[in-house]
Image 1 (cartoon, rainbow, N blue to C red):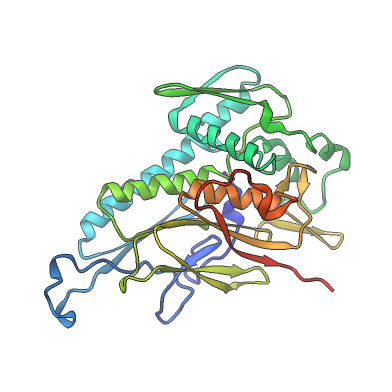
Image 2: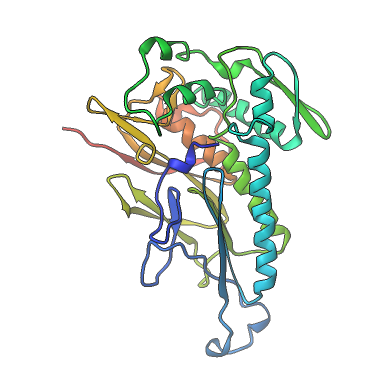
Length: 348
């Protein structure tokens, strides 16, 4: 689950990811969660109303930094809600990380050709991943872990040999994944030795959705869950306006290139500017094109998607970034999924 932790902007206070929320204040890049309704103090004059205190915490998880923020006057309640949200993030990591041998994904990858029992949630994400593979004509492929390991852009300084890459090109490895749902657990298997599961392009979105649901379970109506740039914004800011979300500038990651309004929605960004190496005048980034088995050669530097679910925003950002056909390559597109910002390199 290491794809999106390398994408996108971070605020000046260290938040990692493609998006950072902000509204006002001395530093507009700082991650700020704002606003709750008047509730019981509605009758008080504005000057006498107690101001909510922003309660927020960060943890390292899923190879990146997660932050949950809640504006409230009840810190103890907010801390319990944040604990529940973090528990969801850790649970998803423990079951769906390809880096853990005892996770569902780790056991599935090690059980070539044999059915492997996985949790209900892992079964849900595997089925959603296959649905995204079908609707994107294979531009989203959840079975490219072997190619990801081969490229390993965080450590490589030169590309792998063409004959090493060739086996992953046009392979349609997602077709080797079978998933059967059960009432409590599911089971899955892989039918190709080239196929191994990497849910990095979808499981983080699922985890953000699960964390947001945990907040809602505590009655949180206004808040943020931000995991390395996959973000869910709950409610509105203090003034009742949509939240503002900043997108990093690929040429200057310390700056924001766009400000987007988000309310009760999810946002995810794919970009080529945080995990890559350069060789021979070309940037080799972590976003692999299943049609070539290599990083996609494209003028797109950053692509941001809004959706009702972060799972869909996460998968769509990957699919659209890697799809040769561009924005029209998802069919049928789930309701509410749309590109809201794209940065393209202009060459002369």
